[in-house]
Length: 72
Image (tube, rainbow, N blue to C red; front, side, top):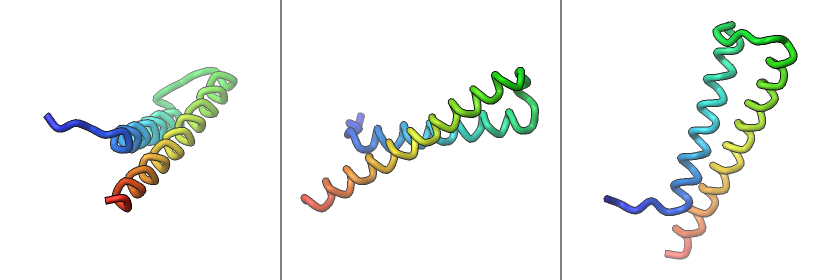
């Protein structure tokens, strides 16, 4: 089995966080996830934070990958 290096893991985790955040936000918008308005707001802010963390993590992984490629 091929060993995954740290940048690939960061990129995969970042994409997973962003996609899961998008899907859950979409489910809230089309009312498949029904909560109290206050809980919906808290969940929306949490999903926004997850999306932002995924973006930063993915960009950091891409930056590390570019550094590794330039060193070769």
